[in-house]
Amino acid sequence: MITSPTLTTTQIDTLRLHIKKTWKTLTRSHEHLLQSAKDTKLDHKTDTPWIVYISPLEDCPDIQTVLERSLSSKDMQEIEIRTLPSEVEAIKEHGLLYLPGPYVVPGGRFNEMYGWDSYFILLGLLQDEEWELAQSQVDQFLYQVKHYGTILNANRTYMLSRSQPPVLSMMVLALFQHTQDEEWLRTTVPLLEQFYYYWVVPPHLNSGTGLSRFYAFGEGPAPEVLFSERDDEGKSHYDRVKEYYQTFEVEDYDVNLYYDRENDKLTHLFYKGDRTMRESGFDITNRFGPFSADILHYAPVCLNSLLYQVEQDLAQINAILGNEQLEKQWRDRSAYRRDRIDQFLWNEERGLYCDYHFQSGKRRCYEFATTFYPLWLGISSQAQAQRVVDNLSLFEAPGGILTSTHVTGNQWDAPFGWAPLTFIAVEGLHRYGFHTEGDRIANKFLTMVIKEFERHNTLVEKYDVERCSANVSYEITFGYSSNEVGFGWTNGVILELLAGGEKKV
Image 1: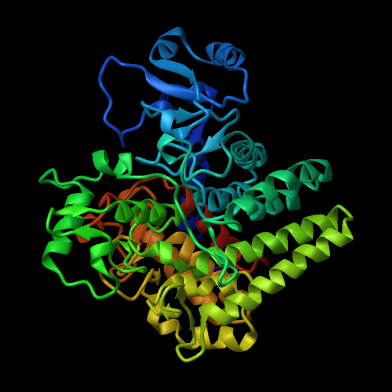
Image 2: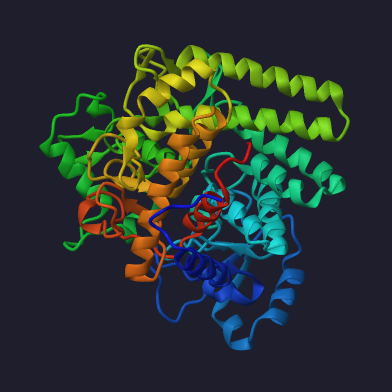
């Protein structure tokens, strides 16, 4: 267990107890269906029901009967059950996508099950011995792949057209380490493969490099952004983006691709990039140019590192199940991807992993904490890991790891830090034997979180790691400026760091 000279056992125990209680308040199941269906991110007319969509592969009347047994008649009157249309374009009114078992939501305005949040939540559930809930968390993701085609950004209809960073195979193996249930493990393989192929065929695949990119399928403004991400003057995020383009010169990309200055309109390609940036989980950062509008033209370090891990995981699962030939095929795929990552994403001169721009054939060296992913997942050589550690001072702050080195008014840039990125850096440092550095950063993050918890009696999704503060709203100009409470992945990372931070991936 990590200990800090600045933290007492009582402080740590109080925080642990708070997290233990919070899992209950963040859990959604059939009995919470009305609570889950309510969505503050969209406009909703009073006295109209909240819509819950059932997969067309399910028997809708049967599920309605099950739900009627779990809910009061008053709650059922506020919900309308519909079968999900087979074409996304046919959805005229947005709603919640049904999941059959309990799951944990991040918290605050995020009252649905999110893609990559759930991996860190799962780690926390396993640390807290919430075995049944942990099993259900993974099973709901497997259900999503089977019934909705992929892991969704979140289980709302307006997110059917985009996924999130691929962490399902890591979740499956983390749970299997506890259950040792080989029969269940065998059932996951077709769904893990289906989710893998979502990422490694066009349009997600860039055939020139053999690497993948994020790519959302929807068109136009993201509905949840139009309604909910407004400032005190009532301007939407997209209004603020247009003002930025009117005011500032952009050298990172050809702004004419994304903004029609003559008509003061954002282009179709801007909205495609905007939705894709949300699929990446990093909304918003200037990592791929202002507002990451140019993200479609990049092979990102984070995504390709995670796909390497999926290949490694499928090799390991096949080894457990005794499929030697399939194990070798997956090992070969991961070796090929490691070579591609070395070739296209490693910047020897800078000693950092950088995202690769397909069109220019150059890496964009925007210092970003995703440079720690190849250490976390064991892709780096020892020499490469040493080079990244030589650059640790770029990212290390009084409260943990800075997301980037650039202050942009976006929440996924400096001075902000997030639990998952600090966790990934700490795990990566430990993996390559940099225990002093890993422990130091873990202690910084834990100290900041506990001090802020004692001030506000809550845990939040992000922190200003320069000032060691949870008060961040006034510093955020683009996207949503609130700091949501709960908070699922912060809970999970805290429990992991307290447990030692040296678990092998």
